[in-house]
Image 1 (cartoon, rainbow over the protein chains, first blue to last red):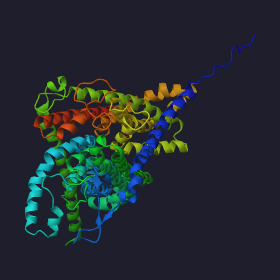
Image 2 (image 1 turned 180 degrees about the horizontal axis):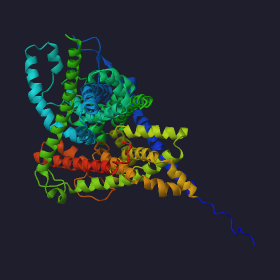
Image 3 (image 1 turned 90 degrees about the horizontal axis):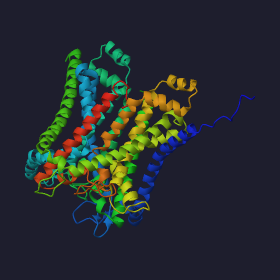
Image 4 (image 1 turned 90 degrees about the vertical axis):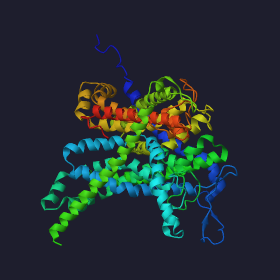
Amino acid sequence: MSVKTKAPRVDLTDPIFRWVSFAAATLLLVVLASLIGLLLVGGWPALSKFGFDFFLKFKECPVGQGPICIDTPWNPVTDNYSATAPILGTIITSFIALVFALPIAIGIAVFLTQFCPQRIAQPLSTAVELLAGIPSIVYGMWGLFVFAPWFAKTIQTPLLIAASQSPDSFLAKLVAGVPNGANLFTASIILAIMILPYMAAVFRELFRSIPAQVREAAFGVGATPFEVVTAVIIPYVQKGMIGVVMLGLGRALGETMAVTFIIGNSHKFPKSLFDSSSTLASTIANEFAEAADIHRSALIALGLVLFLITFTVLAIARWLLSSQRY
Amino acid sequence: MDRALRRKLANYVFIGLCLLGTGIALLSLALILWSLFTQGFGGLNLHLFTMDTPAAGSEGGLRNAIVGSVLMCGVAMIIAIVVGILAGTWLAEIGGDTPYGHAVRFLNDVLLSAPSILIGVFVAQILVTGSPFALGHFSGWAGAVALAILATPIVTRTTEDILNLQPNALREAGMALGASQFTTIRTIIWKAAGAGLLTGGLLGFARISGETAPLLFTALGNQFFNADMGQAMESLPHVMYNFALTPYEDLNKLAWAAALLVALAVLGVNILGRWLGRDKNAGH
């Protein structure tokens, strides 16, 4: 009598599980690949029609104005489009937002990790992280209903009145615009408030990753907290900090709703800090649902530009943060 | 000036500036929350849940938007959790160290931080117009897919992080009993990581529940009550976008009420996620 009565059962669950989970991982890859492919295919008609003019187009200058004039058409009636103004608006707003948010975010992170009593630090950090999760449209609504009217009344109007005394001064050129609070500058401030909790939270993680001995050693030789931060902590995580800045920039560049509400949405070359403008994302948000043909294609081309910019920035951020040992 | 005094002074100025920065940030965020609560609570009443979005001047609520948001987020989360947990498990347990695994991880991060409006454009091109799969009109399905694409990378990422935290002894124990890899993962690893996996799902949900941009061109919006995912569908963020931009005060008030509902949901889910993952070091 043989012991072995039947062939060993072939267990298929493992291979099936491997294949199914592999398929799930691949699905992510397929989605991203088709996203890029679709942006390329969808944007191609506009890109091929306008060529390099889509990004930068010169025009003849009106008499008495500078040597170079840039044409920024965006006209669904004549089907003439250019990405110059939205690209500029995106870069300017993100840059101003970073200028405001960066020092404050570093200040918060330093305060939370170095000076703050432990009992307050934990709830405060949690609060900062929770605020990073508030949907951007809420920030946009606050900007539209509260911040823009306040800004127009208490800052923009007095500045305009002051500037009207000397119409040719630098100030007058800087603050020219309609005093309704919907402009490049207010959009940048809202963006700054939005990326602030996010950047502060990542900075805090970064600072906390520094071994305690490093800090203690610096304190041990008699450094003040200020010297510990500037001479030890910040150099220690330098690369990582640039990475965080890039992460914040990536967020600001792609931010849609908060900006759409208060940037004023005009497709022209911004002439002053308080001029209305538009960004890549706000232009798409405003027009895509009703666009057809070449208009739609131009908007998808804007999306492609936005994707390439954010992808580059975030890839750099990732590289800097991963080369930082922490 | 004495050197020691100068150092001391610089230190105080620095601490002062840090405090000032924290103060500015907390003040601006407190102002936002203040407006949200004062304006939002004014609009909170029972009609919000029993009536649909009105035309300007007439009474109404947010019933259609709440139902739309719940349906679309629900479908999106089902997709995101199934795909995300499987993909995260593959990365952590099976193929994460292969070149292909590295590529998937990198692309997942790209997808995680891609501007949400581009996801909207992408899904609109595929499911609304312009492709063989297109329905030809706006639909709740398209909105749900767009939200799922936003949530999946988050779930994948947290799943991988959580599974990597599980000790190898657990895997060895399963193998030593002769269990297959699938059984080990299903009955030991996933179980041990349960709270962390749930945290991933909650984080994903918190991210998508306030997203407006991807819904603008996919689900559009719908003034009427509609539980059919095949048709255009209203959602809370879309109501906020639409009604905030109108000059009518009653509609603005509804927009604030919607904002308050969404913010409370997001905060609640975030706190719940934190509480669940408090001891598990939930990779966030």
